[in-house]
Length: 338
Image (tube, rainbow, N blue to C red; front, side):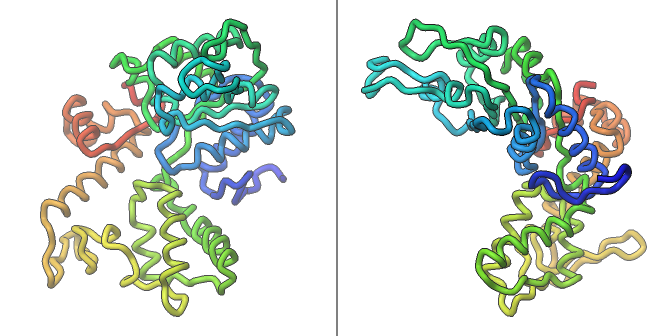
C-alpha cells in the first residue's frame, strides 16, 4: 500500500475514518512482537476481529488461535476450561482433558471479557503471565506453555482496580500494549461503507438483489448514536434484508429507537427550537436523549478526560461520573482517570 493512501478495510475490519487508519497502523506495529496486548472497546466494536488480525499478521499465524469468552463460562468451570483437568479431578471428569492454554500452544489465546474473570482465577492467570506455566485441575505436573496472550474488555479496568474488583498487578501485566477501538458514534463516516459491506454479505447469503436504503432513512441512521456499535448496525442490515419489501428501506422501516422519544415522526429544528410533532412526545425520554448526546459530545471533545468533559458541561467531576454510571456510558479513553 502506498504511503498516505486511505484503507477502507483491513483483515475483516471495515472503515476509512482516521480512527480506523490509526487502528490498522497499531495492529501492524504490535503484531510482530510477542507482547501481551489488552484490547479495549465497547461491546460490538470488533475486539475479536482486532485480535484475529494481530494473530494472523504475527509469526504465529500458522498456529492455533483459541478464543475464550471469560464472561460466558461459569466460574466453577472456567479453570478447567482454561487449564484442563486430570481424570477424576471432580465429578464427571471421566478422562483427562486439555485446556485452552494447551490447545493454543505455539499460537495465540484470546481472553475476551477479561474483566469478568473471578479473583481466584486472576491469581492463576497472573502466574501464567509471569512464569508461562500452570497445572491442570487435579494435577501436580507443571505444564509449560508457549502462548501469546491477547485480552479484551469493555470495562475500564483501571477504575476496576481502584475499586478492588480487579488485581492491579494483573492489570499491568495485561496492559503491556493497550489497543483502543473507537465506538461507531465517533467515526460515523464509516457507516456508509459498513452498510454496503453488510448489505453485500446478507444479500449474497440469501441470493437476492442488494437492498437500498433511501436517503431520508439513511440520514436518520447517520444521526443515531449506535450504542451497540458495529454489531448493532450489522444486525439491523440483516433484519432489513429479511423483512424489507420491494428491496427498499424507508423511514417507516426503521425501529422506534431511531427516533427521538420513541416516536416515528422525527423532531426537526428550526432556528434551534425543536418542533413538537402532531402525535406529541415523551418529554422525559426526549430530554434524556438530548442529555446523553451532549455528554457524548463533551467526552469526544475532551478526548475522554472526564474532568475536562465535566467542566464543559458546568458540572463537578463527581456529579459527571454519577451521570455516566446512571446512563451506562463506559469510557476507555486514556484520560479516564483524570
